[in-house]
Image 1 (cartoon, rainbow over the protein chains, first blue to last red):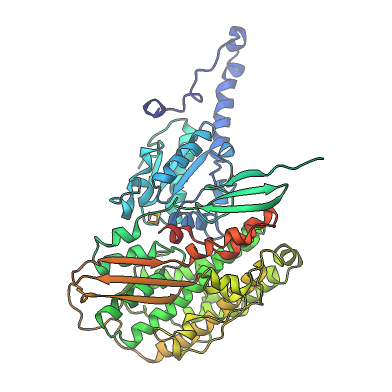
Image 2 (cartoon, each protein chain N blue to C red; image 1 turned 90 degrees about the vertical axis):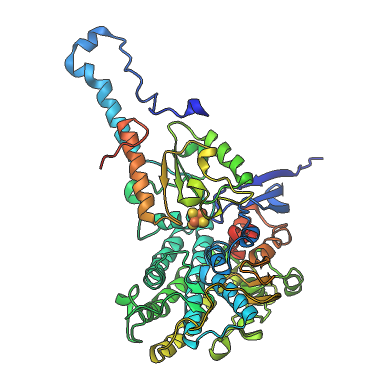
Length: 182
Length: 381
Ligand code: SF4
């Protein structure tokens, strides 16, 4: 798993292929690939589609974020995809136990790059109230690489939205890890 | 001769229906289900074993998380059990607060049950409307308890704090106060929300066609499988623990038990839930009238610091939002329970799935799962 824990979205940061030297001498056309890439990243950041995947109590707050008051559609993420292959973001909302961990990993593997994981709630972050039991995986980072942790039991929908904005920022800058300042 | 072969497919554990991590194995003949079997355990969180290492008060937040859509009713059941074991007298006001909260919670829980079923059937609007009203209950609960969804509000011997000032409101409060006072919410709910559900879905021809006649459940089968709550009542059995085996102070309230017809189908289960919300609103109103006039203690005054129930065991039956919740407590005289057994209605209802599903289309499966309204947290515990 270690080699998966890259800190840059590598394919987004690939050096722009300089195939035609003559075109590159033109200032405007030479910058075109970079501009297109920026535009592309911006668009991607505005349409993070989460996977429709709730596990436990936190899933209800995730649904609340999709509901009428918090309205995740404002952030372009209302299209919850039932299939992992169409999703960019996996929100692990709930307690993952030994039986579920296998499924979580498989779903993660089926997602297309670039993919992100939010560990929502105390259970997904470190086992929460169930950390010392015989069946609960204490922290979903033992199964999949996590990008953002959201504390709380359950976290409020605002907290989830904040995490989503963090993911958007990562996509826009093309880097993983802590990107927002302050 | 052409022959069709049975096809075994696997629904879940991550699947488009919004009922958590349920996995169902289904055998199909064409599009018709011939066999279905739920596979559970994806949310087993060791609640019962974990409780043995906690004190009685510490178990309360875990009961919230069994059936997380109906937290207060679980807390209530557990507290009643401990109180019965220790012989604690709960102040009248505390009991009224608990009942009022439990009924509000029942409304809240049924709203999500209905909304999720509507969503599963493709009526996304129903889901959004359900959330609009749930958020109003959440705001009220947040002011009373401090939590939106899981409260840890009830204490053994009472409740954590009295109702905050001004939350009760007056019977004249209308829609503009729906998320500020309980009266406002109840009035808004009765005059606006319930008729809306009737117009939007209950009397909607498309919805009726989709649910009527799907998965009828004869009353004998329901009884034989141990069904309870709305699922049992929708099959025409008039059985509600609040009326038949009154606990707490439910014998002081006036309310009816809505029942469906013999052979209740998905539609009956829907209608019974809508009617139950109406009855819960009636109970809340009666409790509010009493609460407005009778100040008093909200927790039993003389409680020992460490609760050590005497040796013995106790069983409590409680009408939760989804059916009969049973709490079996065994005490060995120490501060931790020796054994906590949770009888979960969802677990019992889930075993109805292999009975209900065969003979119906695959798309009806979603309606069936929605109509028995299971919460996987409680199935696996
Ligand atoms: S963090 Fe709390 S609310 Fe979230 S799944 Fe765990 S127990 Fe439930």
